[in-house]
Image 1 (cartoon, helix red, strand yellow):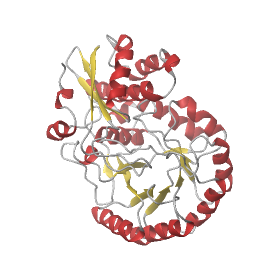
Image 2 (tube, one colour; image 1 turned 180 degrees about the vertical axis):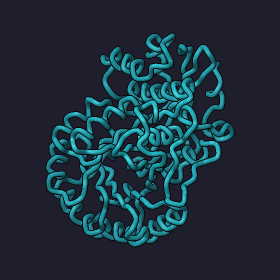
Image 3 (cartoon, rainbow, N blue to C red; image 1 turned 135 degrees about the vertical axis):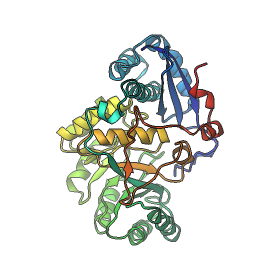
Length: 378
């Protein structure tokens, strides 16, 4: 089974706020769906966390490398694409595009063999995963109202971040976390994301240490991105002294970027994003490295229904990955999956049982936010 062509469509019109200092608009494209078409008519779908213009440019560069390649060997083909484009820079548009291709190839392999991707990744440790509702921090009254509504929907784990947190005063930070803990209750998981990968992040190590101690009083499960994303030394120092686990890594791409962080003991929770790290092939390798280093992988999942499906399969195939991120309020997650997503009575999401990713895209939603022709070869 050979690759005939690869197409893509950007998602626009429903892009949620990201909490970034230069805020996203609904028409901004930060997610691109990728479809791999085979000569035999089988198609797989992936997702890339980047603009569609960059993906199209990357596909034009990668085309001589993937045309005619086997569609049943995702890890080998993806590594070929990485190895032959190193001179354009590791990471960035090329790696993000390969991420989407890799996920789509795993989808094809699953469809061709009649198996869910999680089983093909090495076997399933679980058939359902606990999603944590990921939402922007806000002033305490509004945030509490939002969290209570999500709790009513059945979520039992929550992550708040960005917004005003870490950007005004320690008193406001504490009020935000106190209000969040009161809203979700003592029995729920609560995580806090400072958003240190935001442009020109101004908080230093002393702030991170003080804030970590404050978060511990509210039984916060992890403190995410408290420092600038390249401050490896600062993360290692913070993790050694912090009373709460330290999480990060969403901006890193390729497994090689994670190696020094794991060697330095800089993170308790590593958070590769399969839609930009290099796909499921790379995320799985990062997960193995994390396990050997005494850390665990929880995927960064600020993405799409395709990305969420990929994360569920990844979580099923790694022994210590029992959480996935669920970006709330995004139609690219809620609307793009035909039939939507449903929490069970325990607040868990079932890992799709169907072949491949086990995901059917809603054609009307795809036409509304992207291009339905993605699903058919040109």
